[in-house]
Amino acid sequence: AGNNIMLIDTHIHTKRYSGCSNLDPVDIVRRAEELNLSGIILTEHDFVWTEGEIEELKRETLTGILILRAQEVSSPAGHVLVYGCDERLDHLETEELLEYVHQQGGAAVASHPFRYGDFAMDSFETLRKQLEIYDGFEVLTGNQTDDQNAFGMKAWETLGLTGLGGSDSHSLDMIGRFVTEFERDIQNEGDLIEEIMEGRCKPVVRQGADSIYDKIE
Image 1 (cartoon, helix red, strand yellow):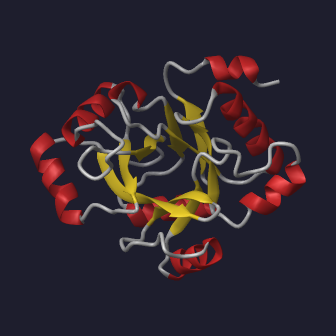
Image 2: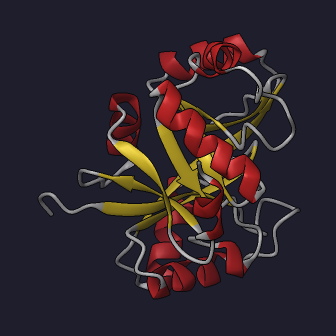
């Protein structure tokens, strides 16, 4: 697996550990296979799958695609996707959270930053200050409107920060709608974190959401 470009849906919730999702893990894998995704990341609210559970899912599905795990942490500054930390982190202040994740060798990505108005949409200067403390931000996500995603693309291009795309799926038709393209081969969480930290990734509209391109000036 030399220079294979990988398309990974970096943000998916399952009904096993996220009450807001109706997605069965096996169905998620099957749908990702249909879409020819390279991998999926199961991200639950303030909860991380064990490695054993991931292995069990791989055995059950006999899939060849990459399955990694992460969590979507509730923080005072909004939701944060955390890769590489297994314990609960939702009791921490945002700065403490980021510091802790980095001590553990993990990566922290601002999740759907424009969905709730947590982040500035009127000043790139303010937005840069808000976003640059993270290792990247979700540019494209299934839980932002087309306008918010179009703004995300503009912010990503303007600020030059690391950008990801994830479906934030809670239902089957959302899977793979937005994905992150990685330039290098990823085989585990360590590889994923390294690629995010080095900024070797970009957000991609994968399927059924081309309309946002019409809104990008």
